[in-house]
Length: 173
Ligand code: GTP
Ligand code: MG
Image (cartoon, rainbow, N blue to C red; front, side, top):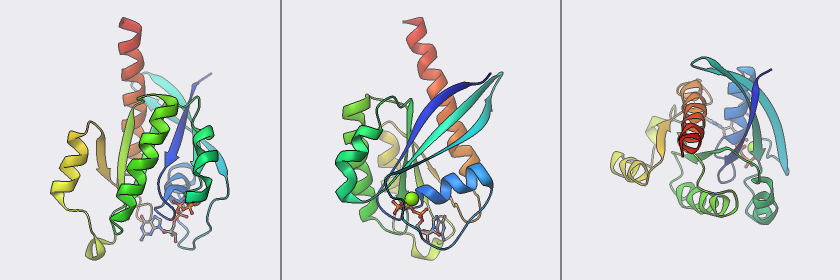
């Protein structure tokens, strides 16, 4: 039986949290927007070297008014996937705020930051310097497109690897 790890999808409204989960779990993309109410939970198994992990993906609503409730959803997480919409720079500030609030509840868990909608290059609002600043704040940063699938497998496997690596450190003391 595979081990299970809870992962919370964090990020502002409409950044593509649900679309990334749909792409990763079902290999589909729907261009139509249906906002998530509360939370939706999906699972996918990944291989990490010689181990199998069931990632339990908690896909949260990005609605600001739900933030208090959302925070209670992050308990028991092993990692965070923070989603920023690369075509809407203000979603970076919102996302970083949510990330900080989530870490205050669940601890400094391994996190991957994805700059999503990379297929919309002409509308891109996040320059390389900003991307590097995010990296130097200690997170893995990567570009994804839920539409084309680019970078999606890589983002989730990087998070799985980071979660296992941080557990290994804890074990060694
Ligand atoms: P909430 O549940 O409201 O917080 O939103 P969300 O973060 O789950 O966003 P969702 O996945 O519903 O996507 C919002 C809109 O962006 C939808 O119309 C998607 O089709 C679109 N979208 C998501 N990812 C991408 C992407 O990589 N590229 C493009 N072009 N559109 C995307
Ligand atoms: Mg959603």
